[in-house]
Image 1 (tube, rainbow, N blue to C red):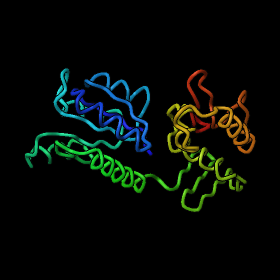
Image 2: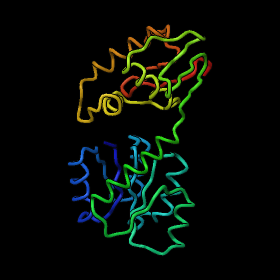
Image 3: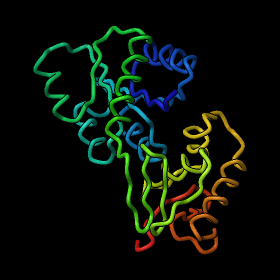
Image 4: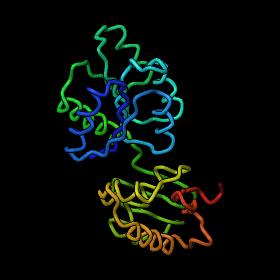
Length: 226
């Protein structure tokens, strides 16, 4: 399951693809032109972008460069162009994969799984932020050299927030990523785990060190020195 942004101006292609990927468990956002897609990536970062090149407001290749300037999100090019030099140019410009039209939803789903597997393998396994050291492989977290006794969900929330250090993470995003509840789960669950985490990190919502509430938006993880 992934949060997918489909950027495609042809509704005859976009609508059935949205329906099919949603039926496979993905959360799908859509844009019919480039600049709204760029804004969507800023406002609600997806896990993967499927990008058509023939957009009405901006060349897809130029949009690719703009997306790469603000995000490392895995990006799949959907194109009718099968020229090898063009494909190499797009991969060199920052695309993670490409798929030539016409394609089936099954092909797209497989490409999404593939780029997300590669992205997961490339993700940092050990994070050191301030006095906090988190090891994803060993599933351990130490604060000032002392181990933290975290439940499985507490560890998952802490690592996800730390891996997105400096960015605001919404509670709905945590519900989708940690609890796999993308369709409006109960945010109280997140609040409770954040409260437990804060206590174990030696902080509170009113006196934060690592976990800062951005009112009306979400949670930002920052190093205490920041």
